[in-house]
Length: 318
Image 1 (cartoon, rainbow, N blue to C red):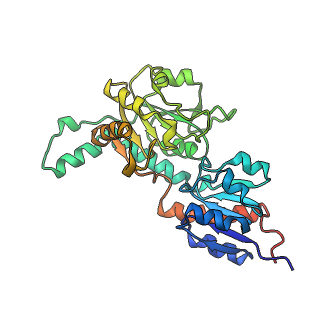
Image 2 (tube, rainbow, N blue to C red):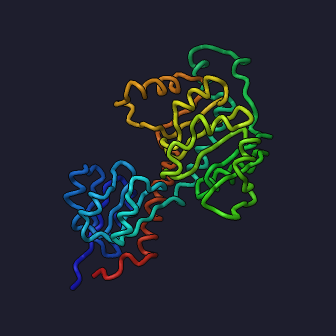
Image 3 (cartoon, rainbow, N blue to C red):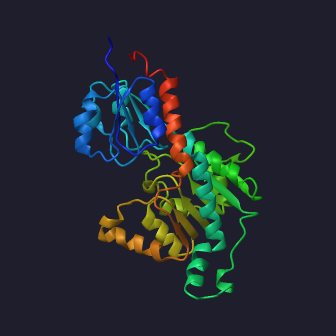
């Protein structure tokens, strides 16, 4: 008799995933508050591992996983997983990026509109008893050129949701070919540097994209721009963005992610940029929740379950 296979889940997931895995024959060890020590202790017996972003799945973890066949990422980016080591050990790595694309697309659009209409600024002022219409005169998104950097699931969702706003949507993705669709035009960066009014980032974090948005990159834009980072904080050199905001190169910025998201433990250097964006009337901030809606919470787990079944990772269950 083949022994029951074990899936270790070390982050919060919707109950549909735990229930579904149990129904198809897996034993599930659900430990949403697991520490790294817990992970290293339990991983040796696991056939599958489900994670989000809080824990680094590095070579130490993977080498300790003698039975591991797959790692499922409950979300989009897999930058917290050592995919090369996993591949060397024939461990499959997959994500659920399709499941939160709508959430990210809506959040991106919400941040964009808030920046253009100065909603954050005017909201704070009215609550403080200040009724200042002229200083809160906004701009219209209509007629602007929006550049979407990265045209995977979330980039495509952003383009689709922008389609009703009478914008010109350009997109650049160095990893794709012939990827224009009815919502966005495939472009080269030279065209984007010349025409863009808004830049919204939807790229994975890797060696090529880490620190991509720096002073040199920002200087190439012909016009002052709005910038939104909805992917990974380390894609942006945030101090360079602050400098660009101070000199007018960036008109406003939306951040769902930051270089350092441990706000309780900022270095003195980090506090400089954080204090600026926290106090600025030209920023909109959120705590890495663009893809984390009530709906996506369910859809991510449902999609992971489907992928585990579809790729026959549950074979030989008894």
